[in-house]
Structure formats: C-alpha cells, structure tokens
Image 1 (cartoon, rainbow, N blue to C red):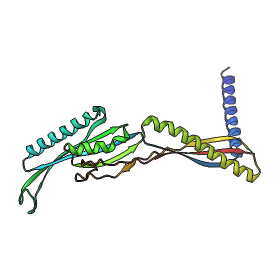
Image 2: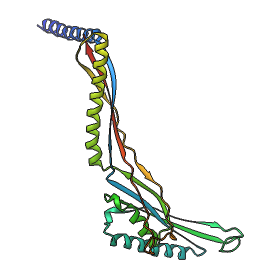
Image 3: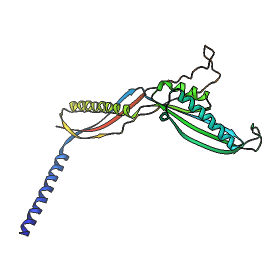
Image 4: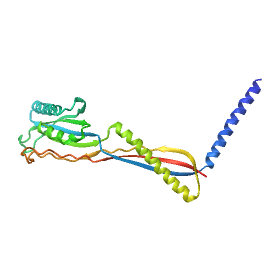
Length: 243
C-alpha cells in the first residue's frame, strides 16, 4: 500500500513538471512586440516653500544668540499675523560657530566673532503669497532668502500620475498598433507590463529683496514671484502578443 502511494505521488509530481514545461514552451513560442510609452501632464503647482533665515554676528556669543532669537521671534509673529499657522512654519536649521576677524572687519583685528543662523521654511498652499512672505520676513528681521520652490501636494501628484500613466499606455498601444500594421500581424493580447517611476520636479524662483525699491505710492515695492508650471511624467513598457 505504501508502494502504491509513493507511485501516485511521483506520478503527480511528474504531471506538474510536464505542465510547467508545456507552459514555458508555449510562452517561449509567443511572438511579441515590445514598446514603451511616456505620458506627461502639465499643471500649476499648489504648494510653495520659502526658506528664510536670520543671521546675526557679535563678539559676545550670548548677544549674538539673543539678537537672533529676538529677530526670528519678530519674523514668526509677523508671518502668523498674515494668517500662517504653526503647521506652515518649520525651523529647518540652527547653527552657531565662531571665526576670527580680519584686519578690515568692523569688529577689529584678530577678534573672535560668533555667527548665529536660524532657518525657517514657510510651506503653504497659498502659492500667490510667496512675495508677501519674503517681504514680511525681511521687514521683520530676516536677512537671507535661501530659496523659493513650487511643487505639488501628494494628493494632486497622485491624481496626475494616474492621468500620466493612462497617456503612457495609450502611447504604447498606438506605437504597437503602428508596428503591427506595418508587419501585417495582429495584436492578440498583453504578455506583461512594467510601470516605471513617475517624476515630478520642483520649480525654483529666483528673487532678491531690494529695500530701496519704491512703488508709485512711495512705499516699498512688493517682491514679484511668479510660479512656473510643473510636469508630471510616467512611463510604461508593454509586451504585446502578436499573431
């Protein structure tokens, strides 16, 4: 009885192996057209990041630190007065180091000076407020604008990725149809699909604050910041079965 059981097990394993071999041979015999497609969706960014900093220097480390803290507190208070929340204001860097001045330094020759830098990023969906953020920060203690970047929120990026993928698949199928028609064959189905990574770049705006610039009413001219569009791209590779 044990011998008969072993016989059935061996026979069953052989049947499975034969089925796998037949399937492999069938797949190897398939004729394919392999194509790639890329889809692109152009849109306006819905998030802006403005990186600003307060930098102070003083021969006294405590004075340099306290001056910096006061200016950054004023800067944050002014930004909150515009309506920005704590979630939109993030400290991204804080440093303090010393260096020795040169002979033409206002601090005197061979004197140790402490430099304190506090960096704040404002990230908001109010993309039209970029210039106002810069002006407000500079007017209230900030003395560096590190960068201004525009990007897409995760929700919008994912929605547009789906649209870009659809365009990529349509492009791939169009190319496959053209090749099949030229060869005089028919597309019977899809063997496999590989989806590539999507790409959504940031766009950066260059700006410089000029405190001497005046508008027609005699006040400080607002800093103009224009957001560029961003492209969401996606790619696919598809193997079509032909006959």
